[in-house]
Image 1 (tube, rainbow, N blue to C red):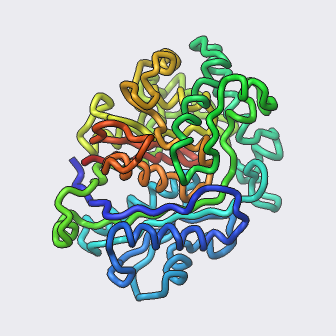
Image 2 (image 1 turned 180 degrees about the vertical axis):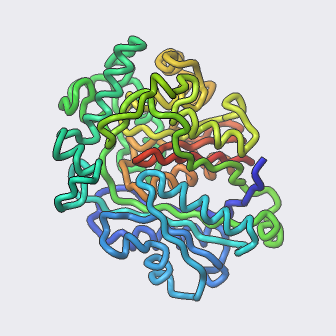
Length: 396
């Protein structure tokens, strides 16, 4: 097992479309995390910032930007960008600093202020940038990508539009109880069927919105936590930021082609399987040990893929798990008790950190009406562009 670190405090700025500077969201989340941890800002020795490429130069140097907002103290800094994996990457850097003895206590923070509408590549002509090309050459927005994956499930496993809608119904039922979620309305199947078609077979209510938001963690060595009287903290037991081992069996945007999977692939261990496997290995746990999971539901159909990639069921059986009620609160393995990104929306550098915040509230037994009974082990998972893994396992 990889050595563990403690999570002493969590903080979050509510998700929404607030139209304010991202620094404000990150600063509030950081101050809330420090207060939750009962740690003074002047005690923090290291700040690990998750970057936002949409928020100008301050977004590219987020750690120093947030440190400036809190008041420079001379602490050490690192800023990282890995698209949707940015938050997990920032946490992994803080963990490395703590376990190597460089620091005892660190702040991890990410925040985003998003434009209206779907994400698009940065402005300019960049003919060697695969992400620029997928928009300008193919016209493939993120919902197009989600719809292709949904169609794949329908063709291979017989999943239906009703199954995809049931994911949204489940997660919206959870999100009603989350004060930090942007959407706290419970939707039924008719609401989803009546929402506009965006990318067949996915409708508007089944596609994750873009949002503003911020999230932060205060983490420390177990020894430093004990010195503050915290003897049984929530622990970070595993983090995965892996790249693929083999070429992908399906083409992942923004790539427009893949290496020869037929010659070199491994059907039993795709990239997304690989992400969870590394986290399980570090934490010395298996899928059977999980009490709940927070997964990357950028579309309702996409959530079903993750059931299989994190080992909750065999390939093709995700819809059966959903239909049996196993992944709802009260079921065998609740998925997205927070409401998921469908209830929050994407605030890219903050979302992997927000998933960890939810794990902490669940493992402390502080999640209120969305509490998973007896939760001891949780897993979060998403991934960044260009094959960048992102998973965290927390235990208590």
